[in-house]
Image 1 (cartoon, one colour):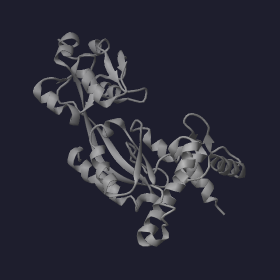
Image 2 (cartoon, one colour; image 1 turned 30 degrees about the vertical axis):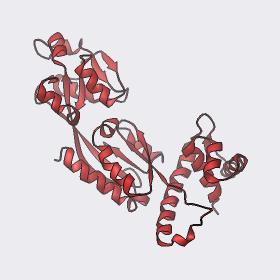
Image 3 (spheres, one colour; image 1 turned 120 degrees about the vertical axis):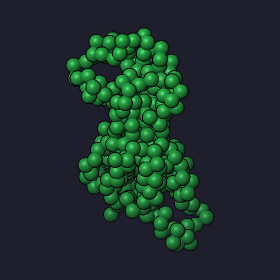
Image 4 (tube, one colour; image 1 turned 90 degrees about the vertical axis):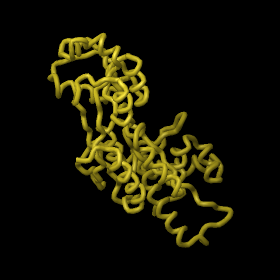
Length: 300
């Protein structure tokens, strides 16, 4: 039989980041939480909690946390139908859903979709951020229930819903263009003009350069892990970068930014992948994402 008291202890330690906070949330002593976790780890023969500041889940611990999310959703449905099961001295725990998305979606359209879901339901959301080429790994490793990803092929155990494409433009300030590309953009001056790169996982600039100028160009870059700071840095003339159309179209229309090469957008298709066991219960969230995405992303 599964020890759900111990499972719940593991999940709460991960959610709150400490044994003490988990004990407060579950209304037991820290020693009780510690004992439950220790006994479950010994029974399973594996570490579930990586002790630290904060405490985090091991790979196996992540699967325990995702299981408890499913259990929590089932419990919420049951209490909706049978509210008398809830006692005054034992209020129901809020269920936190772990979801992953890419930074540019979070900085443009994603919040508009999840805000309505969050206000219309009792769920809490924990949003993880990673490059769209890597968020599918979070699903594979059991770290999230659903994710916005660039992967069209279904992750094992997941359903896929197309969202549309997030359009990017290679942009820079007029002053930057005059300084580095006065005679037009070429392989030679691209190799000297500073670019902007989000992180080591960010391949948008490289993809655009390779598509239009070939794969042999190596260019200098600033590292700037912030969607909105990318736009600010472009406006301030620090470098050129691939900026979401949703954030720069007004700047382009007003002349505050220019495309490096006119009419050369880069469209990145996005998909919503959701764990099949949670898909039916997350239909309102999926529908909210689809509705917003259809209004702002490129539909082909």
